[in-house]
Amino acid sequence: MSDLLNQTESGGVMRLAFDRPEKLNAFNDEMTQALLAALEAAATSQARVIVLTGNGRGFSAGQDLAEFAPARAPGGGTRSVAAHLRAGYNRIVLRIRELDRPVIAQMNGVAAGVGLALALACDFRIAADDATLTLGFSKIGLIPDGGASLFLPLLAGFGRGLELAMTSERISAAEAYRLGLVNRVVAAADLGRETDAFAARLVAMPRSALALTKRAFNAAIVPQLAAWLDAEADLQELASHSEEHRDGVRAFLEKRAG
Ligand code: LHQ
Image (cartoon, rainbow, N blue to C red; front, side, top):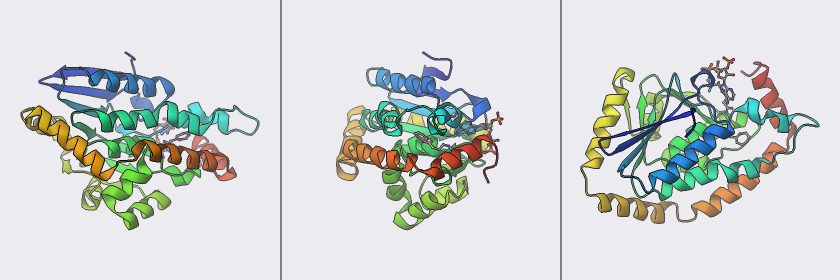
């Protein structure tokens, strides 16, 4: 267990809270692997519902761009983005979808990049009214990854999904609700209580019915998920070799990003 992921369990609900609040819970390798391990352990736990959330004012700002930056610098490291996706986020998305119990994203604050992608891969999203969402990838020359190129149009529709992906517009929770990206929006002060109440409703439902319902929806809507995540990683690899990507990451790290 890592200090970067707090795990608690009560009333049949496992809560996993990202804990790098000073970086808006951006994912470094340690936090990524901790989440993957926790989701793997959840598959055999007594918990009937899993809740993902963040500590502080962020749900997650996505990939830690400072940690991955050396590979982006001219003459820098050689880490492949595709390999990075396959070793971490893609496995997390598959775990979320394959878990035979509901996974809820409790969106306490800003969700960006692959942080938003992971929320979109969950079964349900409950957002605080002051939370915001942005894909952010296009600003740094990338494509939506972590399954977002699939789950975003699935939830928001092709046109609005593509618009959000291409513009990286930062939208409010209310707008996200209007677009179908989140299931409900609640007062920030009530977020924990409202999520607990919703989770308790699910805990009280017949366990196998929920497991089979999830399996049915997966088979109907995302039957080729593993293959798509793989293809998405290849496209991201292409994008990551561009000058636009290098310049975009540099602009963010030097705080020149608009
Ligand atoms: C961060 C981050 C961050 C590091 C905020 N990293 N520090 C996969 C494969 C391989 C390569 C690349 O990517 C991917 C998948 C991805 O996820 S790509 C997309 C990565 N994420 C982004 O591009 C979002 C970057 N962040 C932002 O645009 C803003 O921070 C948002 C809109 C999330 C929030 O803005 P503000 O509320 O104004 O907060 P802030 O920008 O002031 O951030 C607070 C701190 O968190 C700050 O640190 P500092 O030490 O200066 O206080 C930021 O540098 C840090 N931070 N996101 N992704």
